[in-house]
Length: 309
Image (tube, rainbow, N blue to C red; front, side, top):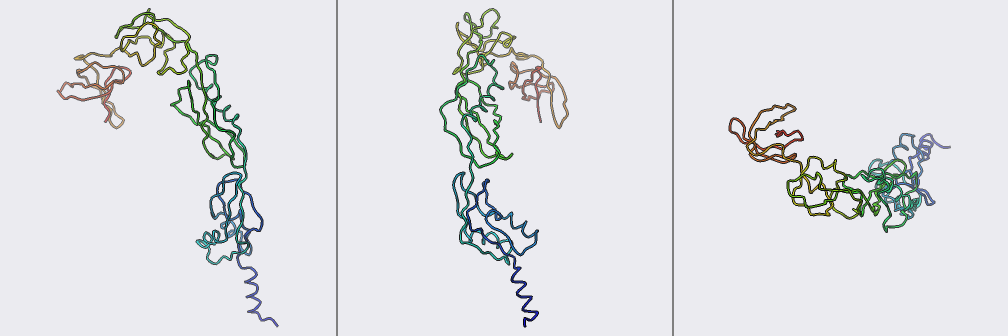
């Protein structure tokens, strides 16, 4: 006859919380392997099973490859949280990482669309061709979308590298750089005769269509963009005008009176002083205040000297 104590012991053994490693190979579509991927649970509450299922075991293999999870791997991770849990099953479980393919043509299309939408040229002025690059990309299986990461440093002409984000199931996966050749023929200002340093461009330039694919600098597309500006240095006939060749006339000369705006903790106080050098927009100049103190500030777009503290 079975005693009550023997029955309870047998009952407890039958329902001992157990992690059972899976006998067959399993597949995942993520970069991390969790306990629920490689094991089943027995003899435990739903809360216990939910907690165990989220225990991180190890990183998954690259897409299309496999990695082995050993019982030792599982024991090391589980025993950190649950020392009383029993672990059974095979000594190893093979975990394959499912893969999907992102076509190179789709990456190039995303990059080209971004360039067309953001370039300063008219669409008829630019010819975009993909440069030689890698082939299709293997990624984890899932819902794949592509998005270009904003990059304010792109010049949109010449050899352009566009960073395309690969997003899987709504989560960032990786960035794939896409190389494009953007050939540009644009309207430019071209000098008709010598323009001396300090001269304006009025009557001294014409508009021509030029190949500016590999030309450095920012092209000045029309006379309106150069209005009021003067040449920094002498410009020879036939030269394509770039923004770097021009400068705005000074707001004030040396020894001229200037307005000084002192900004401190959200409060602006204005006073006057005497400029110790000529001041152009965004230049740094020294100013002598009425009390004799000399300070240094940056010239703003409206000709004031800004001091920030």
